[in-house]
Length: 63
View (cartoon, rainbow, N blue to C red):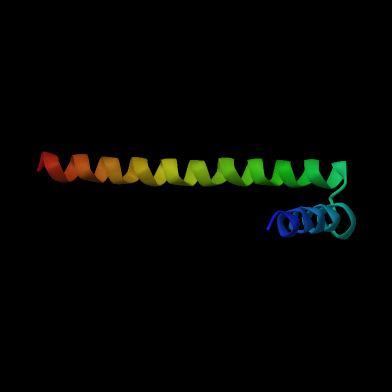
């Protein structure tokens, strides 16, 4: 059982080390910036929708 575990760990390490293609620093920074911009845009859309629903609810309850 321990031998199988060690074999699995070694295979996982080998795959991560030799078979995985890692992004360059420039690609990683570009992707991170895209994710941050998308997150801000989505947060703004949700905030605007929340404000619209809030005002509609206040309008409905004030009638």
